[in-house]
Length: 178
Ligand SMILES: [Zn+2]
Ligand SMILES: [Zn+2]
Image (cartoon, rainbow, N blue to C red):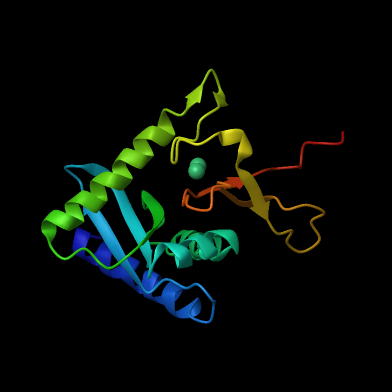
């Protein structure tokens, strides 16, 4: 697939995600697709919330995680998009208005990815690479699925109410208890 076809395919998924989440109290009102191979090889998909309050509610109540899962599930089932190198991000406000604003938003997320890559010191994270707050105070959230006794995947947020950092986590218990 060429770039345009890939973008079209991604757009269908993002629209579907927004539609499917529209009953939630805090649902995204728009999305944007950021791709510029000269800047970064990943496709950055941004769900936009009307304002930072809605964004924070969606982080706390799991809507962001749900959107993240929705997107990654659709991509993994889509044979054409299977190897898509992507980053799902969240932000608040309106769509960028021009090329320059799109570029600035894209650079913001590329910088975020860069600091995530460099956040661990000797295998430990002390300061969150996304928000620069104490990483150990971040909350791990998740919901057990099916017959799980504890969630095996979920998301992490910062206790600071003004903070909007988001990341997913997953764990495997399969090799424990033996
Ligand atoms: Zn924070
Ligand atoms: Zn953080």
